Image 1: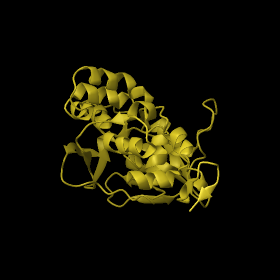
Image 2: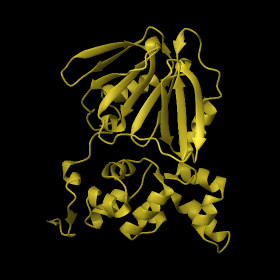
Image 3: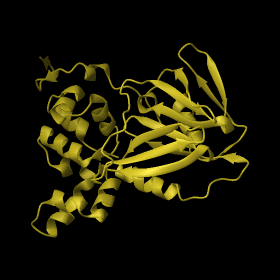
Image 4: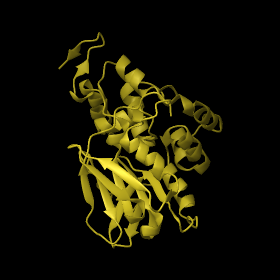
Length: 280
């Protein structure tokens, strides 16, 4: 989804690291929001404050929803959003996760492995519908693919003992910011196969046939596949793993592997002076 975070940040002479510090979030999260990931409403409001710009200028797709809410009465618009599910749904389509609940998805695999993931409000609504579906034909394997702040996860639906959608559970699932490896959990095994891999190149033109090994893998996982389908993953040493689809319970792929790393200059934490030079 389009937003003007990067344009306004650069106009203000801020690096991603500097904006992240002002907002109280990570540089990676600022990068993902600039790339189009939905921002939680509290983070979005702090970004707007740090950039000195109104929400509808930073996130222009929210303009119609915010103006409609403002016309309905004089009370605080943010308070309205937090108590209006329809407004939350509209903003979810416009790049803002306005669901006040902290949602989590708890999965238990047939092997006994339990995983807990932080998910957004819009992702919770999508998964709630998917989890009610009966599943795929016996000759196929169906993976449920979803995103957390830092991971893309694909779980074999037949490998799940149960899935539990939780909210306000008093804790947040921990996701290591620095993990750059792929974890593959197999049926009836509790320890994952860990693969040290290189990130895909940043996304190029939509017409390019080679999306990168992990973006290509996720395209495959998003559809039912034959049980004998083989997934191919090459590690940093050029060694190749061949993984049979029907044996896979769950795959965790750091989103940094599929999105492409930010420019190196964004990591230095320096702040521009507005003239193209950096100070500090």
